Length: 452
Ligand code: SAM
Image 1 (cartoon, rainbow, N blue to C red):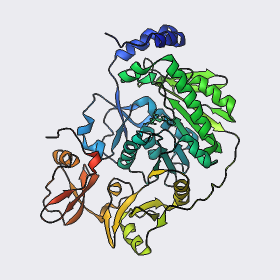
Image 2: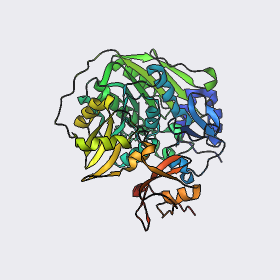
Image 3: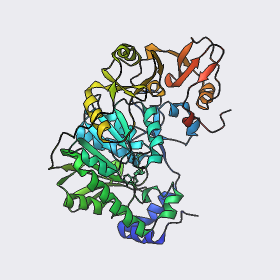
Image 4: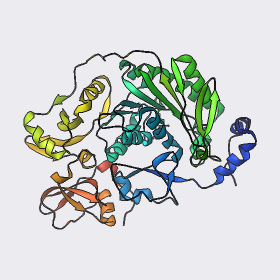
């Protein structure tokens, strides 16, 4: 029994890909490829986990799908489970901005954070990544994934795209991974099939146009828009691509692809988009196109009253000892000291003044008078100074118990805060208070599966 696809979808797809339609539906019957993307800052010996994704050096196809929840390395941020086609945006960013660019990137539709963690891996130490999610209930999972990933230069906002209009010409790159009709996910997502209808694809296309129009002002002259969807619907893909070119001062940018990737270039009105489709590409359905903005201005955003104040000077030395020695400024937010790389401090303050910041990076320590209690954020951040804390390495079973928020008994560890690691990668903190250990793993992130 094949996947039952809506009749109107079939009719439209037969028009789009003709005789290939049967190959396409046959491909949807094949098992879903499982792929992960490695965190280059968290060496986890996973380099040999499987075949390399052709367009992403950190991408790996796994031979089978493990129970990811029961792998402590996932919770350590050693990798992100991500379908392979979506990793194409990393290839795009490398082409338009080079390696480790010190640029400002806005990932406008960011939850749950697949592409955000990818951009976080690619920006330089002087880069800023703003990960935005308008739907408030989807922000916690985005924050959690970014915390585990560990990039000190990524912050999370929750704003409507139109709010970014205040930051005229601020971003070098704006990525719009648009909410869409999800046709490219039909193999894995029965809900996407059941919710699909032609009228809805039109609503999606209009919403996508609104999103791009709302955020366009925030893009710098000469900056790049990366527009992507996980659908095949022309209104949402190539027709919107042509609409962007005809509506804005937007120059289409060609992206290099290799013939053996199986990516289909889609030409429309002088633009090229890139389509990933299951019978040709090793991944799910995906579409991406890129534009360079040729007009506009940059403006110094209106300085509002800053919501962040510096931490008391007497604490700075101690905070510096907890971080890895890179140059940070420290700000106070709800009695917590936040480390902001000095190279981007002005940018971060500008974002904090103008937008609804839901997660600053990196929360280093909670301040109680003269006492500093390390924050979970620090444990998993690339900014952590490992030498500053005692660490206890856990077995896989104890790591799972820790992630389940059970009591974990660790012999011979000093009093106070201890970093808990698995395969050398931090999972969080425990505190030795003499007669027992307090498990400080965040309550909301605890594994709910049985781990015994
Ligand atoms: N980029 C994400 C990733 O790689 O993990 C996936 C993003 S998903 C395709 C689209 C996102 O857009 C969703 O998180 C959704 O909540 C958000 N969204 C929905 N309506 C929106 C709107 N009107 N404006 C901006 N974002 C919206």
